[in-house]
Amino acid sequence: MLVLFALAAVSSTDVEARLSHMTALYEQVCLKAFPDDRAVETLMTEQGARAMPPEEVKVTMRDDPARGWELKDGNGTVWIEYPPFHACSVRWNTPEIGDLHEYRMIAERYEKATGGYTVMDPYNTDYGDIHVHAVGEQRVLPNGTTEALFIFDQHITDSKRRAAGETGFSLRFVHQYHLPDSK
Image 1 (cartoon, rainbow, N blue to C red):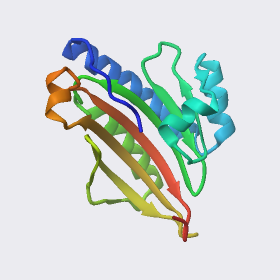
Image 2 (image 1 turned 180 degrees about the vertical axis):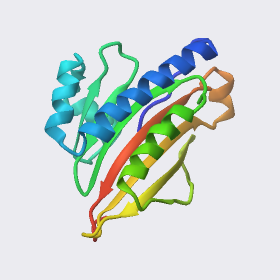
Image 3 (image 1 turned 180 degrees about the horizontal axis):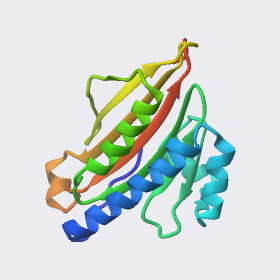
């Protein structure tokens, strides 16, 4: 699980520019290159991203098999999680969620091209004082595998931590395949 840090004052213009950049990265890496893991690895190398060592990956993914890269500018990460949940995600911290219109456009374009998606019930849970919320769409492939596109946001709910400045969000866009009969 990512730890949320207090974020310095950032303008809405900066938030929207970063959101636009992360949306384009998600499209390039997670919708076009993924599920070809080698293609994702190649893109991350070409972009000068730093491959995270296993001990850093474990902080976020715990015991789930995965790889992660920190973007060259240090302002986000890209992840591949290996089966049974084969997923690609782009993650970053932000002081506000922003307008997700660009994300919706690329997700709808992908979903229209591949077909068969339905809206999932929103996901809400708490891990200690971190609230996690997700929305998305999924489809079931002929072999029973579920393919899904998600937007996750998480934030600190503890009033003392929020008063101390931990008011930002951790956002992630996820493209996931879940194999049938796996947990």
